[in-house]
Length: 270
Image 1: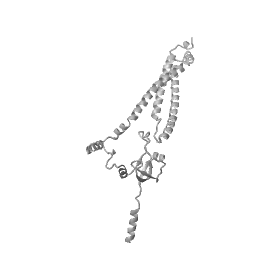
Image 2: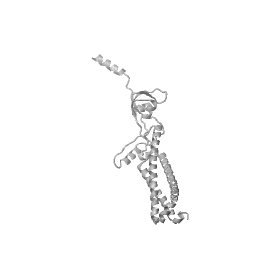
Image 3: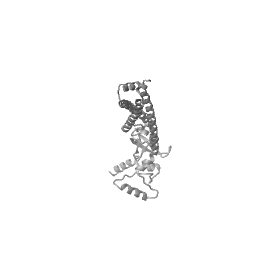
Image 4: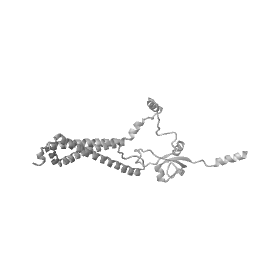
C-alpha cells in the first residue's frame, strides 16, 4: 500500500502543471483567428520565451469612444500571472474604489491622499472630464456648425418663400378684390408656409434617420464596435421641427405682409 501511494504521488508530481487561462477580446480573436480552448504563448517581449496559456473566454469590449480608433487588443490575465510576466510586482498604476453613503467619498479621498507620498485620488467624474476633452471640442465644433447651418437655412427659406409668394400675386389680388380681408389673406399664406415647413421637417427627419443607419453600418464595420456614430434622437427631431415651423411661419408672415400691403390693382400690373 505504501509503495502504491508513493508511485501515485510520483506520477502526480511528474505531470506538468496545467496551463494558465486568459481572456481575450473579440478584436484579437477575429484578427488572430483564436477560439476558446486554443493554446497561445505569452511573453514580455517579442521572440522571448514565454508561458503557454489557454484561451478560456472571449470578451466584448464596451463601446468607449476614447478607444474605438486605437485598434488595440486586450488580454486579461490573473493578477499573479501578469505580475510575474511583466516583472512589475507589488506596484499598480491606478485602481478604482467604490464608496457608499454620504461623506464616504470625501473620507476615501482624504485617506488615500494621506496613505503615501505621491498618492492622489480623483473622482470618477473628474477622470471622465479629463479624458473627454477632445470630445468636448468636437461637440462645440458641431454646435457651431449647427448654428451656422440654421442661420443659412433661415435666410434660404426666407428667400424661397418670398419667391413663392411673389408668384401668387394674381391669386392674392383676386382674393382682395373679392372682399377677403388682408388679415385673412396673410393668415392663409402663413398657414401654407407652416405646412410646407412641416412637410420639409418630416422629409429631413426621414433623410437623417436613413443617413444615421448608413453611417453606423459603415463605421461599425470599419472599427468593429457597437458604438453609435450617428443618432437621431426624439429631442433632435423636436428641435428641428420646432425651428422649421418657427422659421417657416416667420418667413411666410414677412412675405405675406409685404404682398398684402400692395394694392390689388398693382399686383395685376396696373
